[in-house]
Length: 295
Length: 234
Image (cartoon, rainbow over all chains, first blue to last red):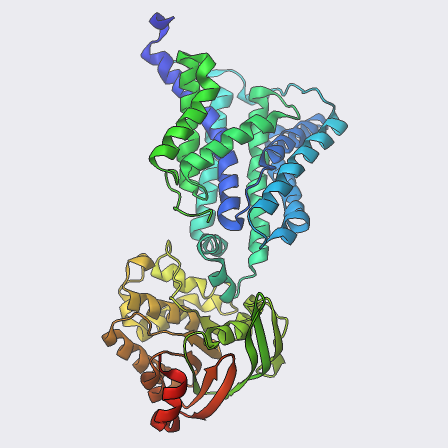
């Protein structure tokens, strides 16, 4: 077994880790954005991810093209997110962090149950789009094209988000509002509208992550539950509320999982939490978190 | 321009403002003085619409503001520079200034308004692309004032602008207030530095335990050692 551990294999595994990490990144930036702005710990985030996969599955089943679905799914899931914020979460602002946490925790289960009722308890396979099947030579070996696509799609989302946050007025409002919501309010900004949109963006990206992950693992009502725990680890490691932290920690966690599964497969799931424990011991606020954010 | 009548405010169960009446006319600098905890900051916050429980009437430019959220009051021409500067840490000086325009109808004129700000605040002009938090306390306070002014508000309310700032910058700031007044800017000023504040103000209200206990012309109040002793000495 060890004899097979060539540098090429390790390099391949690194790429596999990055593809896995890309999905973590997409999930965690939404979690982080929502937490940083709204101080809502969104326990329904995994359910939005799962809904994304199901909306994609449904769209494809009625003949929508995969590329169109890539655009449609985040919009559809984001709209569900808008409704959830407006109707369920908004009344809980100002009541402390635990109210929205419990609400979204319960909402996640409701969403899973609704999907079970509509689509059945068993999962579905999700075909890799034809154009993205097969493998490409990436110098160290042949790598599945679709995984490469997941990495690229994540990069596009991140670049888009970066431009949105750094170069637009609305992005300026988000960056300022995350630090000091009262200041943006007295400068004329309707903060509740900003929170609504941020929740929509965060859940929309989660939906996209679900669709992107679907060809890798299939679609099932519970698919969001495990990955949500992992995404929380990523946000904690990266620092709650930090987008840069979510990106770096997401890729790191992906690579750590993928490397441990190469050397000690039985340790793969544990390795994430071990990593979190180590980071928390050394740097309790995570890579880029601000100390005392929860207080 | 601003008429406040029977303004009451509560923080939880404590009844902080117990019927404040005050009036500010166009072009005036009006000063709110009184001890710590007298209700000066609460008065400004209530006028801005930042407190959840208030009663009474706040009429600004003929419009009743009661029940209107803070962000709409900014749109109506009311600006507020809160205590402790409140510069947004991660943003540059320019971004902090732009923030004053994001929700304003003057957004289209952003370049021109930033140019004007650069002329009024030469210290900020040199530091436009610097992260705001790296500036000195006084410069940050100047930025907070510049940000509140950029959308050309009709009334600016400032809470303790001189607090914790080096004397030379305090002088510069009060010179600026005089210039602003000369250009027709109306200002409501809460200031611990009573002598300095009364030196530039037209009138002043003395607040004690949530009510206005005295109103006078600034010069008269400056000469009135007894009132100052009774309500303002720490």
